[in-house]
Image (tube, rainbow, N blue to C red; front, side, top):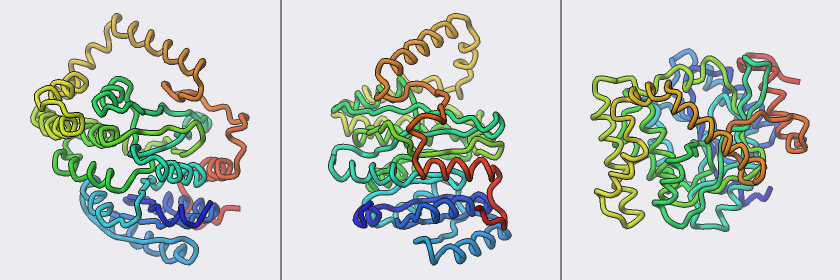
Length: 350
């Protein structure tokens, strides 16, 4: 890995009240000799905030750590942090996840050579600590249409999150500015999730590499497992319109369509959220819907089988004996996550 690549990248790590996970992440990054800038944005309670400061002091001699305390909602605090980033590329890393450095730097190298791409990532793997540490490859694929409208439609048809991609910094700054102004994460978490990923495909193409890139842990304290998608059901239509209109405005601007047409496209893919998804939830219980979903799943499984480099249309069990799992970074990440599923306290890993 050349010095030039790591100097172009900043890792951004949001954390709140989880110093044991943060310690585990620092141990992994130290083992991998990560040289890129690492920006911690902390919103912990005082006791955990103090633990985090001690961690920063402990690892600062070996990692290029920077710390800021921002006690604000997640979207706003991330916006404040990324607006200060000076490197051309940025990658988010959850405090309980690991990013494999070779995969990250290959994305930086690719983006340097392809200016029409907004972001890039590789295979995301989820390790389930409640199911005998089984690993699953998560959905992901390249979105490389020249048309921003077609890219929007493709992601709307077959959703996956681009959140942990390596981003061009101006793209992610724009995405967070629009999202923070439009959405209230505390009232409806689903809208900023969709808006951020759709902004990334509207503003450029997305590259997905068939190589291991990320290991994330499924556990009971995952925010996605404990936070409802729409908390404020009483005002859900108002929240939906606040999400739809800025997304449509960006789609119209980037694709050259009219604003009315762009609004109709957003409604086509996400209009079911006007009532918080209640009607869709009822439809999912019908036999017709289940048969259609199963047909689509089988078609996607066949697609994954005959075109493995287009990975992945579906979540799929990862065979740990495959050659793809025989690199040092993956083995170190897997070892630490299995051995310390709740993070590392004062124990030094061997």
